[in-house]
Image (cartoon, rainbow, N blue to C red; front, side):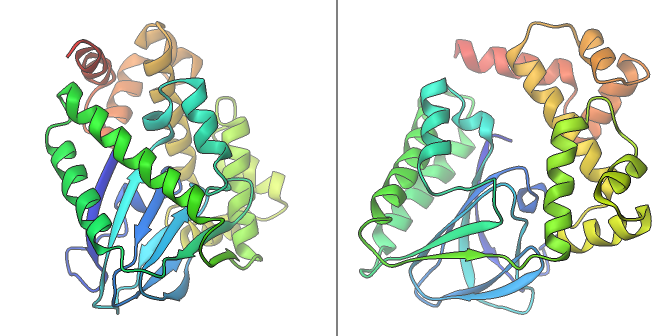
Length: 280
């Protein structure tokens, strides 16, 4: 998954909190329609006014409010999606919209009805997603999402903006836990290590992680390892066996089985799909 777009109904029975798009691994842009809507950010509920444009960093876990029958549109994309060059990635990190160093999201109030813009982006991103194996649609998807980010950067200086910190406390522990996983995940995969670093018991860390991040500490650690493995498969020529060894899996088969369970394709298939996209 490099990017996606979904129209979400919070009260929909089809909603699943286990969906990976809600976790802290993707950047998120939310189109709020004329009716407004409620969203859950790191377990806290917020009411958003009509025609807001939200930019939510990877560090903030997002959920719809299951008691809200209003819809909103979610665009989500990985860092790899923007990592076409160091210039593009630096633009994303320096645009002023996404702050992964803080528990901060930005909400821009657009005074004029943006429905025509929203509809255009939604329609063509959905078209791109359905034809993503073709180069022209991959280019279209990237261009559309970058244009939305560019508009957001411009709107920062034109329209009313709200910068909201999500409350600290337990959330601060969860945020620090994710930072520690990013730093130590290759060599440290035990929950007790991270609990000791945070100065809490493993039981307390589990309660915080499930409440704030929607996953157990072990799941967060596994996600960190596998996210790193995707980068290694994408950006290096190392063999799958060597990557498994560097990530300290018991063997290549164990690594492949875990990767396949999370991403729905084996490391070898993932690499082949990357090569196919490069030549189309």
